[in-house]
Image (cartoon, rainbow, N blue to C red; front, side, top):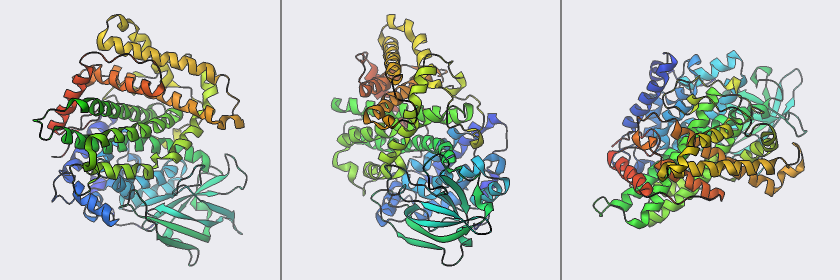
Length: 590
């Protein structure tokens, strides 16, 4: 496949040490990239927010920053270490990507993460030749893009699909068009999910790995660029195939494996997206704190205490959910699919609501793209739906969760053991992500077990009162809701019934996903080792769970005295110290 010469940076920084070094190496790479990208608020910085806003206005990728990422061999983050890349654990991948997404979601998608979406099928089911070819392509600075099959409730990216028809003498010929494909015109590999069976069902699609440079004349046509309202700096255009020949060696996995491969790889994609877009919302929160403190001697008007602390708690909760899902992909790969869908279901809604709250703090300044200090709100509001965090993403998550609810209610909830504590423990060594081991059905519900276990351990705290008492009360309220949900889900129609599409049934996925999110918050809080006193203290978890509980409609205790003030003080401390509003309190470029 076509590609540029292999970069020295990609090879030199490929992890080669034991698992104990993986986290330190990922942190070092993220810190280096953060420093290279520089102060996002410096107007003269070619990688700063002003330059990125200008590129967005011109509807072009930022060339200087793309060149920097190429020099750093950023694409190596998506190649497993066994094939010369840097990919070890999924949670460490998200950490390495965050410096870019903190500045520009469109840049993160257009220059890198789309290659991850595309190549996941190859790491999951490709043969050794395909794996080595794709690894060499990405390590050499090339790009891959994904041509999705059509999904229900599809947005423009997920609308339309290709059909593969058997060709005389073997192989297939591809037909069809998609008008909106990211990087279609500049990708060095196309991973196509094509229909190979007219009947609907789990064997309807197959995956093909194509080199666009090898298309016979007249069988592939690039369509004009498509202008989008969001992610305007990414390059969207179309592709039309008219009888393009694809030999047997281009098939990834077996014929009819496409749907299963999509389900296996989408759980990685969903979890990584949630992990990285939270960093983009962090930038907006910092802008809001700047707006609320400028001209006030560093203090914050009382009317902004609730939105600022609430959003901070939400971002910590989102980070907790995404981090636990990403860690589960390596530690519990056969059992993580439902939780990954639940995280993708909850996080976008939280972020959308958070941006609305921050818009009230920022006012008109949040939509001023001439102002790097404040304009990130406008861009992120436009970018998030295009990044897969709109209605189509919600519907696809419901399609994973709803069919599982009756089985989970009957066999898993309050019946299985808790997950290993390493799932929540900072710094714990975990297995590498292996796409081949990811499951797509069954596996129980380790997060429901974790929720029940956390509530049981906290039960004695109700008598203590204060923040521990509130945390115990919240945990028990979530468990009571899980019990009620179990009774409801036991009455659901069996899998395959049309009744599962009833809107009233789909609402159950809301309730389940918020419960899974609460379990992640409690698990992360319990997993603290005291290194970070703020995270070890219950204040942030109480506030985060109170907001989740209010969204769920369960009884929520009054916030204890000092809870909001404690979270606000930490938010201001991080803002003044140049630290991120994530679980890592990431050191940001100044």
